[in-house]
Image (cartoon, rainbow, N blue to C red):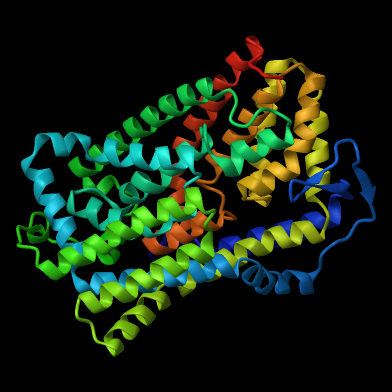
Length: 467
């Protein structure tokens, strides 16, 4: 009798199990809430206002309703993911992306400079995007470009995701100009906006270099021995590359070039829209949809073929879309059970005791834990910074340090928590199961957490200000 190998449950099952655990916690953790007030258009917690409330345990009915409520709550992100899937299916049909990937792969093979600098350049660009304009959701569509590229270069699909998603969130965690994290947190903490930039730039550069070296080392190991990859068998099925596909020399038609020009214009428009006109999901989705239609006509796809390609691309992402909604349901259960504020209050009491260095590090760990329930940079700032800012005054660290602890705690965990909708969207497009991704990213998470703890020591020792 052969022993059956244990199979990790589907990601959707894992997320629902977390929802069950969260539901059970509402029966044991006391209810509690802070008072909230409006500040610059946001509801922020009032420090010192926490009060225990009557426990509000969630039952089977609430558990079963949570996924539908979660889907409704993040319908804009789900719609964005489905539209991106449809649009890139259209663009893939034109053959333009395949041609440019073949051209890059060919140049990579011929040029020693390209072989050494491809990953550093790509990661530097995405990290800078995360550090300046808070690049996060914008990464999602790039997965469909960088995974095929990584595969043609002899790497795996994880490398393709890491080149864009991990890089952007390293920048997000060490941001120096991100208006959605640093900007909001500074406003709530009553600090000059984007103050302390010099140390943040040092941190960003250091962490980006570390990230690049780690991913380059991993990519080279996979290239030398593909079988060590956690997605080796998976990639052969989902992202197949034959020997003849690795280097392809072809003449790019004028139509494919025009499709690429339209894509380039889209990227420029995306950056301008996000940075200058406060675009978010809806505006970005409209831009992608318009580009998809234009690219389809340039590529001489008939209206029926265009529609069929769009539907096929979107249908491939129905599973990931459900995961995003189910993950949001976990937050809804915790909110309705009124346990988030209680957990935050308990953690803030722990932070209040101990050496200032340990207090700063506990703030960092607290923010990482809260991010599981509130995987939104601006939302987490509104919830935690009104408590952490005055608490930092009491424990002898500067408010600037408290903001740094918040942004790193938020940014690093975005790379692993299954409740982060952008991560689930990225993994959905890449077809990588969350449990496989978590096994791969965990050692790097530990490295970044240790570095985060160490990077909080100098600000405490030198009273990094302004206060």
